[in-house]
Image (tube, rainbow, N blue to C red; front, top):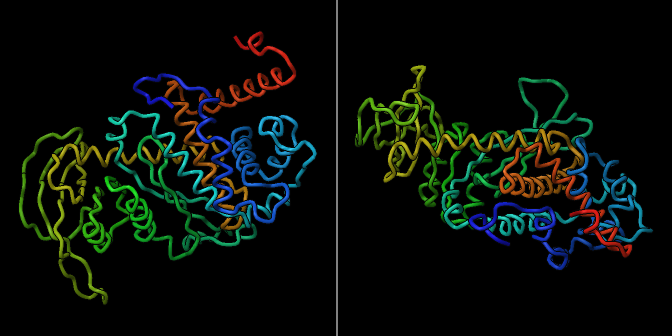
Length: 396
């Protein structure tokens, strides 16, 4: 597929061709996702969920049942017209399917769709925004999940921690244990897993991650990061790089320095300095509030570093997109296996829509609507051609 420096628009047909059937079959064989099944094969479930997420504003297992059993769906994806399923069978299948099949599909889509961008764009987007979002469900439905201690509303929560590179979601994990409520555990785990296969990543995250041991671990593993700190942080200044009152964007720089951070010992009764040094940038906004930025990038200018953090907001926009447009605030499966599958499928559809939106220069809602319309037109064209007609007489 062409990159964006030579391509200005893209069609649904081109996007769906990113992963041909032989690739899906290969992944299915490698992951053994079709072991002991007679109807709901990996390929069928992949297309069923993708189509359901696109077609319905509030996808459910019953929606998937109706879509799978429809003539249009079976024709589009070359499925046996005599095979039918019930929603209970879909639920049971999601609970036991091999998740690695969907994870590898997600990785493949990310790799292939990234090629739609020029190398310059890819270099500009090595900044990975990492954050978490919570989705709640009643305790009676959700087998595992976290409880908010200050809320007794009978609901459990699942945490989704996602890496977003400014173009596409590039990594994701779910967390269900109460101990994983702490961002100091989940965000670093996602970052380190991503960094193992992406050596040039720069990670930006908010101040929910505040453990000094996390920062030192990143430093020891050559993981570059930018974050914010509480203005009351205790530290020891080693070297002042700049002290001024000059403007940097919509902030004013107060101090740029190299520091050791104070951290508590295990008994939390005494404090000691971190072994490593970090760069601490003190700024002030137009309201007079102090904003501290922490990083292990010691060669870049102050403005660039604060701009890196400002771009963290992109992931908040992405979360809003998948919750409002792709039904991600609602569970279609209530066990860990099924939740993971739906997560990967939602992220795959989000990538298709984000590319479609970006290259066709339209908004989120318009992208989803036009994607669906164009898919229907593609189906009609295929049916006309299958029946011996000429689609060009309808679609000019």
